[in-house]
Image 1 (cartoon, rainbow, N blue to C red):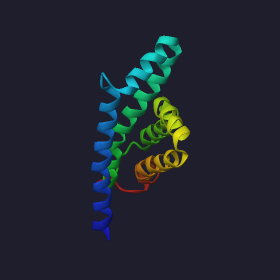
Image 2: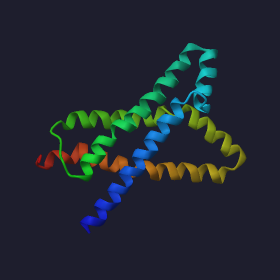
Image 3: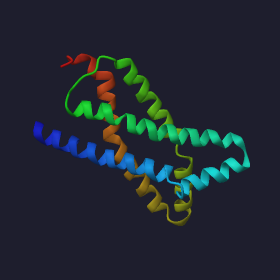
Image 4: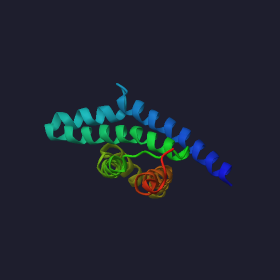
Length: 148
Protein backbone atom coordinates (compact mmCIF):
# COMPACT_ATOMS: atom_id res chain seq x y z
CA UNK A 1 0.00 0.00 0.00
CA UNK A 2 2.78 2.41 0.89
CA UNK A 3 4.45 1.92 -2.50
CA UNK A 4 1.16 2.74 -4.28
CA UNK A 5 0.75 5.93 -2.32
CA UNK A 6 4.35 6.93 -2.94
CA UNK A 7 3.99 6.14 -6.63
CA UNK A 8 0.82 8.25 -6.79
CA UNK A 9 2.48 11.17 -5.00
CA UNK A 10 5.67 10.91 -7.02
CA UNK A 11 3.70 10.84 -10.28
CA UNK A 12 1.62 13.76 -9.08
CA UNK A 13 4.74 15.70 -8.11
CA UNK A 14 6.25 15.35 -11.57
CA UNK A 15 2.94 16.22 -13.19
CA UNK A 16 2.51 19.29 -10.97
CA UNK A 17 6.14 20.26 -11.56
CA UNK A 18 5.62 20.19 -15.33
CA UNK A 19 2.31 22.04 -14.94
CA UNK A 20 3.95 24.77 -12.84
CA UNK A 21 6.81 25.23 -15.30
CA UNK A 22 4.37 25.31 -18.23
CA UNK A 23 2.19 27.84 -16.40
CA UNK A 24 5.19 30.08 -15.71
CA UNK A 25 6.52 29.87 -19.25
CA UNK A 26 3.07 30.49 -20.75
CA UNK A 27 2.63 33.52 -18.53
CA UNK A 28 6.11 34.97 -18.97
CA UNK A 29 6.32 34.37 -22.72
CA UNK A 30 6.66 37.59 -24.72
CA UNK A 31 3.84 36.71 -27.12
CA UNK A 32 1.57 35.07 -24.57
CA UNK A 33 -2.12 36.05 -24.49
CA UNK A 34 -1.91 36.76 -20.77
CA UNK A 35 0.96 39.23 -21.26
CA UNK A 36 -1.07 41.00 -23.94
CA UNK A 37 -4.10 41.03 -21.63
CA UNK A 38 -2.14 42.65 -18.81
CA UNK A 39 -0.47 45.15 -21.19
CA UNK A 40 -3.91 46.27 -22.38
CA UNK A 41 -5.19 46.50 -18.80
CA UNK A 42 -2.16 48.49 -17.72
CA UNK A 43 -2.63 50.91 -20.61
CA UNK A 44 -6.04 51.85 -19.21
CA UNK A 45 -4.96 52.46 -15.64
CA UNK A 46 -1.86 51.87 -13.52
CA UNK A 47 -3.92 50.14 -10.82
CA UNK A 48 -4.15 47.07 -13.07
CA UNK A 49 -0.47 46.44 -12.41
CA UNK A 50 -1.76 45.01 -9.14
CA UNK A 51 -3.57 42.26 -11.07
CA UNK A 52 -0.29 41.44 -12.81
CA UNK A 53 1.49 41.31 -9.45
CA UNK A 54 -1.18 38.95 -8.09
CA UNK A 55 -0.74 36.59 -11.04
CA UNK A 56 3.07 36.60 -10.83
CA UNK A 57 2.89 35.95 -7.08
CA UNK A 58 0.43 33.09 -7.61
CA UNK A 59 2.78 31.45 -10.12
CA UNK A 60 5.80 31.89 -7.84
CA UNK A 61 3.95 30.44 -4.85
CA UNK A 62 2.93 27.40 -6.90
CA UNK A 63 6.58 26.84 -7.74
CA UNK A 64 7.71 27.40 -4.13
CA UNK A 65 5.15 24.85 -2.94
CA UNK A 66 6.88 22.18 -4.96
CA UNK A 67 9.41 21.99 -2.11
CA UNK A 68 6.93 21.07 0.67
CA UNK A 69 5.22 18.68 -1.74
CA UNK A 70 8.53 16.94 -2.42
CA UNK A 71 9.39 16.82 1.28
CA UNK A 72 5.91 15.46 2.06
CA UNK A 73 6.41 12.63 -0.42
CA UNK A 74 9.71 11.59 1.15
CA UNK A 75 8.45 12.25 4.69
CA UNK A 76 11.20 14.69 5.60
CA UNK A 77 9.68 17.06 8.13
CA UNK A 78 10.91 20.63 8.42
CA UNK A 79 11.20 22.39 11.76
CA UNK A 80 9.70 25.71 10.65
CA UNK A 81 5.96 24.98 10.58
CA UNK A 82 5.00 28.66 10.95
CA UNK A 83 6.66 29.55 7.65
CA UNK A 84 4.84 26.70 5.93
CA UNK A 85 1.50 27.85 7.35
CA UNK A 86 2.25 31.39 6.20
CA UNK A 87 3.14 30.19 2.68
CA UNK A 88 0.04 27.99 2.48
CA UNK A 89 -2.20 30.88 3.54
CA UNK A 90 -0.72 33.16 0.89
CA UNK A 91 -0.90 30.45 -1.75
CA UNK A 92 -4.63 30.08 -1.10
CA UNK A 93 -5.09 33.85 -1.11
CA UNK A 94 -3.21 34.38 -4.38
CA UNK A 95 -4.88 31.38 -6.01
CA UNK A 96 -8.16 33.19 -5.36
CA UNK A 97 -7.12 36.67 -6.54
CA UNK A 98 -4.31 35.86 -8.97
CA UNK A 99 -6.25 34.58 -11.95
CA UNK A 100 -7.67 37.67 -13.66
CA UNK A 101 -6.80 36.54 -17.18
CA UNK A 102 -7.98 32.97 -16.59
CA UNK A 103 -11.22 34.21 -15.02
CA UNK A 104 -12.04 36.32 -18.06
CA UNK A 105 -11.02 33.48 -20.37
CA UNK A 106 -13.38 31.12 -18.53
CA UNK A 107 -16.15 33.73 -18.64
CA UNK A 108 -15.80 33.78 -22.41
CA UNK A 109 -15.94 29.98 -22.55
CA UNK A 110 -18.98 30.04 -20.28
CA UNK A 111 -20.81 32.27 -22.75
CA UNK A 112 -20.02 29.79 -25.51
CA UNK A 113 -20.45 26.51 -23.61
CA UNK A 114 -21.30 26.51 -19.86
CA UNK A 115 -20.75 22.75 -19.55
CA UNK A 116 -17.19 23.07 -20.89
CA UNK A 117 -16.50 25.93 -18.47
CA UNK A 118 -17.64 23.91 -15.44
CA UNK A 119 -15.68 20.89 -16.67
CA UNK A 120 -12.51 22.97 -16.95
CA UNK A 121 -13.07 24.46 -13.49
CA UNK A 122 -13.56 21.00 -11.99
CA UNK A 123 -10.45 19.74 -13.78
CA UNK A 124 -8.30 22.55 -12.44
CA UNK A 125 -9.76 22.05 -8.99
CA UNK A 126 -8.85 18.37 -9.09
CA UNK A 127 -5.37 19.28 -10.31
CA UNK A 128 -4.71 21.52 -7.30
CA UNK A 129 -6.48 19.45 -4.63
CA UNK A 130 -3.69 16.90 -3.89
CA UNK A 131 -1.13 19.69 -3.66
CA UNK A 132 -3.27 21.59 -1.17
CA UNK A 133 -3.80 18.42 0.85
CA UNK A 134 -0.09 17.62 0.98
CA UNK A 135 0.88 21.17 1.87
CA UNK A 136 -1.82 21.33 4.55
CA UNK A 137 -0.67 18.07 6.13
CA UNK A 138 2.94 19.19 5.90
CA UNK A 139 2.23 22.61 7.46
CA UNK A 140 -0.26 21.64 10.18
CA UNK A 141 0.37 17.98 10.95
CA UNK A 142 4.11 17.86 10.30
CA UNK A 143 4.96 19.20 13.75
CA UNK A 144 3.78 15.87 15.17
CA UNK A 145 6.39 14.02 13.15
CA UNK A 146 10.00 13.73 14.16
CA UNK A 147 12.52 15.38 11.82
CA UNK A 148 14.76 12.83 10.21
